[in-house]
Length: 620
Image 1: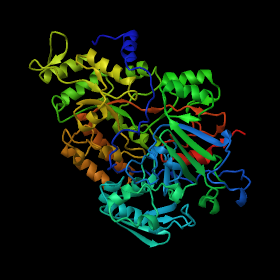
Image 2: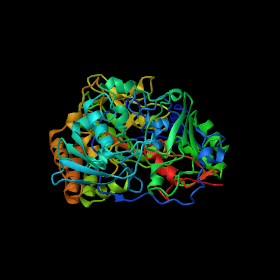
Image 3: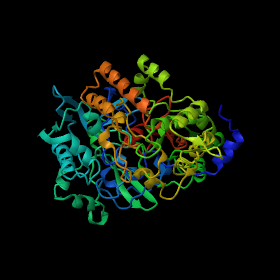
Image 4: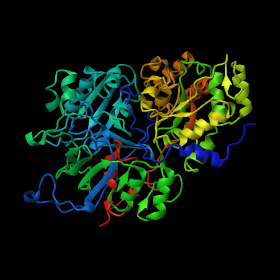
C-alpha cells in the first residue's frame, strides 16, 4: 500500500506556492485560433426575462457624453485586469474580449450553460436544410448599429466572408474558413450559410456567444474598406478626438481606455428597447474595470465597497471575505464550494509523443498514483469536485454520464482509483524499477516527471498533485518557470496541468479535440489536442458523430460510449478536478447577481456578460 502523507506534510508542500490572484481559466496565453465544433442538444430557447420599472427618459438637452457625475450606486466597478489600450476593433491585433467589450458587442444568440438556456438576440431563429449543408438564420427586425445605420443580413454575411477570406490572420477566421463556403444575404433579415460539409451544430458553434467563444459581427459599411488582413489588424477604431469610436449594436460604448483603467458608458438609446425586446435600459450607467492586484487587496476593496466583483479567488480567501462581510456573496452563499463549475475541467497532460508517456501503461500508472479527492481536500479544503471525465458537469452533458452503459464503462476503467499496487505493476511491466532512492528509473535513467503549472493559477493544486506522484515513486516537482505557458504549449513541458474549454451542451466538441488532425509535433503549438494523442479507431467514431444530428440522442449516446471506451483504454491524459469560478459579488450597490438559485449566467469577463447587465438591480 502507498505510504500516507500527513496533512501537515501537504500543507508544507502547498505553502511553497504562496498566495495570489488566480487568473480567469479562460484567460490563457496564445488562444487557439481554431476552436473545435461545439454541438448543442437543443437547450431551452427563451427570451430574456422582461425587466420593469422604466426609468424617466433623459431629456435631449441634458444628454451629456460621456456621462458626467455618475453616482457610485449606478456604477458597476469590476476588477479584472486585461487592458489592451486604445483598441476598439475586435479584430485588431492585441484586442481582448476581457477588456469589457462584451457589453458593446452583441450576439445572434446567447447560451447560458448553467441553466442550459439559449437567448435569441440579434437573430430570432434558424433552420437547416435536409442534409445540414445549409443553415438559414432569420434576423430580428429593427436592430441598429450605434452610428444609426441598420443592422442587416449584409453585415452578417460580410463578417463571415471577411473572416473566411482573411484566414488565418483574424480571430475565429480559420474556424470560419473550415466550415463556411459562402455566407449570402438573402434579404435584409435573412442570411444563408452554405457550409463546407454537413454541420448540424453550426448555429451553436458559429452563431452563439457562450463563455468566451463567439464570432464578433462588424458593420459592412465600415469594414468594407479593407483589402488585406493587415489592414483589419491595424485598424484600432479608437480616436475619439477625430470621432472614431467602436461601432457595434450593444447598449454600452467605450469612453476611456488606459493601461490600468477602462470605462464603458450606457448610451441614451438602444435598439432593443425601441423594438420591445428589452423593457428598459440597463440600470448600470457605467461599468469600469481596473487590474486585479492580489486576492488580499481585492478582498479589502470588496469589503470597502470600492469594487463590486472581481476575478475568481482561492477558496480560503473567499471564505474569509464571507466571514467578514455580510454584503459579499458567492454563487453558493456561505457554503462550499463558493462558486460554480467552469467549462474548464483540469487534467494532468503527458506529452503522448515523448517517452515514457507514449506508453499507455505509464499513463495509467500516473492515474493510479493520483488521488483526486486528496487534491480537493488538501488544496481546496474540500471546496471543489474531482473530475473523472474531460467534461464539465453541466446540465446538457450529465445525461451522457448517467447512461447505464457509461456507468459500466467507468467500472471497467476507474480513473479515480488510487492504488500503489497497480502503479508498481504497470511501471514494472513497462520496464521500470525503483532505484536506490525509491524513484522509478529505466536503464538507470529517471523520466522527466516534473509537473509544469503556472502560479498563481495552479499554485494550490499543483504542489499537492506533484507530491502524490512523488510518493508513488515518480521524481516529480512542481515547476513554474517564467516561460511555463510557452513550454506547456509547445510540449517541452512533458507533463503539465491545463484545462479544456470544450463542450458545454453535448460532448462532441471536447471529443473532437483528440482527433488526429489536431495532433501537432513536439515543438509546435499543441492546438486543441493538448496531449498530442492520435488513434485511428477513435477518429472514425468522431467523424461519424460529426455527421450525426444532436437530435438523434440514442445514436449520439452510442457514439459517445464508443469514443470514451477508446479514450479510457488509451487514457491520453489524467482527469484531475473540475475547475470552479469562485467569484465574490458585492450587494451593497447591486442585487440580482447570478447564483445557485438563479444560475442565469457565468463570469463577467465572458461574452455573455450582457445577460448579467439585464438582471442587475440597484439597491437604491
